[in-house]
Length: 402
Image 1 (cartoon, rainbow, N blue to C red):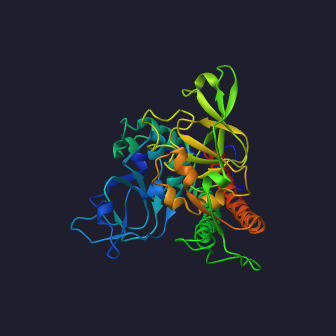
Image 2 (cartoon, rainbow, N blue to C red; image 1 turned 90 degrees about the vertical axis):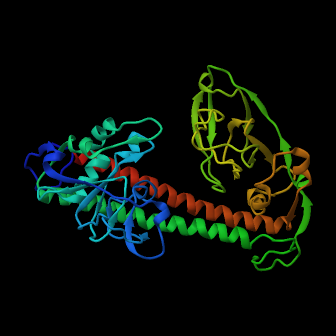
Image 3 (spheres, rainbow, N blue to C red; image 1 turned 180 degrees about the vertical axis):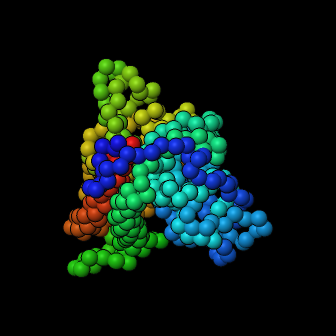
């Protein structure tokens, strides 16, 4: 029995192989290159990684229909046939609309009358079946799951009514997650648009949008006049613990940290970071796993990243240059405003010192920075709500499955 059940359900759960409960098919043909503006609706296996949903009611990708295509009937469950890791590949979505083409590299399950398709998708993604299926994934750089692997998975299930009650709870979580995701996306887009509008462009002396009461032209200053390029080198000791920074996203303004023992850090030449420092990558770094990135940062580095530290931490000086805003109130928002121009630069101290940046009065700087800090706080708030809702959904489902 599960740890948590809805009131009124007391019947014992059954367990059978998924092969006894579902019929199986394989998606056919189609790839990202086939996507076009109109045609038949199409689901590709990559959707389960980039835009995962427990239930797919509609799609916004289309393709020109081919002979022999596999169309949904409206109660299928799809599982990707290939992926990067065993954990990633052991996920599923229900498809509740008919006449959608199910593209290649999709395992397609059609549950029998005993199973609710949404429930099947949830158990494969969150329940015992997820662990079993991940163990069956084969491959190294790319892992694969076949219908035979899925058919051999032990699948616990209650009555159809209890399945539907569990599915309904999970889908309610999904609605809340979607709501906050939309709000988060809107604020991110708003910030990007305002960064373009609230700073002068193409040699202009004033931005398109300003706060009321400010009319003075912005002054062109050299970066070396408003910022110090600093190197606070720290020697890493094996037995000490260190906070290390993981860069997540351009212009995020937020840093994820981890605590790591010195002995577990490959790169010993680190810099001490302080609140308000501005980081710029010194060289191109490919997304993790190429041997260049320390384990603490692997998989999270993007070349030419811009952000401000929110507290003291350490990061490898091999990969990042530090700009310390000690001379003026200039902050990351002013540097970010001309980020397009600096992304292609090879890091050179003298070159950086000569770069021009437009600066308003300190009063206007303060108002701009305060506004963007508030906007960052809103973005962070919705990001935290998203994380909380996703974790709460996963925790509830874990307790509601056998």
